[in-house]
Image (cartoon, rainbow, N blue to C red):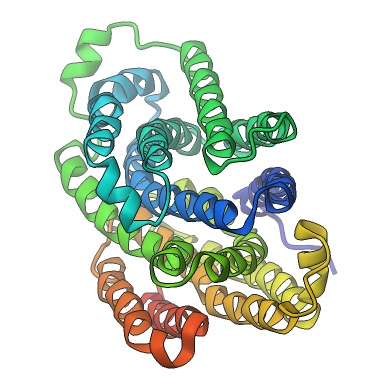
Length: 420
């Protein structure tokens, strides 16, 4: 029987995105292999907590990516590719330019209380605040590549920060700078490289014959761009909290050594479970619309869910059945006195995060359709997660985080599930 045709390119582009993500995951794993071995438990816990903050806030930054990708996808659909550079320059870069000086300055002013809150050096918090707006800029270029369906660029250019972080971070730590601040500085340099690559891509795009005229033309979706940005930001804030807040919660509520152990388990689970998440990036521009369901969208969503579900199940099965294997690969042999707790945390966090990988596909499908009623329901789910952890941390200790996250992630998946 002949195989079904992939005229949409979803599987081909999804596979390209997964390959790019695997390359990034390999760099991420290598970075954690080095930092997890060379940094002490307290420093590693602080590093992963700050990385968790960057990841959590990169989700609302994805609102910029989605807004730009949605608008560019509609421009390309209408044959207006030459208007894309003007669209990019006109509307979205201003938040980055505003945030680049303001966030680090505010963090510097409040470095003492922020450092005390996270039980870490205030300088590390300032560096994290400097990375956040640059990561926002990286999301903008990802939106450009996504909206134009330049999936090779989208798959591999953003991984440049992971390569730089691995190489530079390893060099710094082997040179004797074995601090969380040194390791995070390597990420700062990597993000700068991605911004340079994005600028080079933008210069290659054809311009409209009359840029001034292009700027006066509203184009598709212009009137609702502000609304789209705000609603997608709220939706992605909620998802970002669900997806990445675990290590920050552990760092805040539990002792440094316990938080460091949890950070390693959560990193293993996150690396495995979220490998198929990039399929959502391939799906998004193919189903983008102004609120109506384009023909074939439901079939594309089912195909994407099946593809992602198989990958999630395979990755989760390895972590649940053989938690010692990814731990050995990333961090070396686990100390005998901590082995039971470490393996339990890997299994618990893998199961808790699993539903969120599929929820991300459904979330992106809704946002691509310019529908936000269901995505906004993730806000109470995130609140449930934080409150649940606070209430359960006394009787369950570290297990309070995966227990609360599992409840919130299952509820999120249920709320986002629908027949398109």
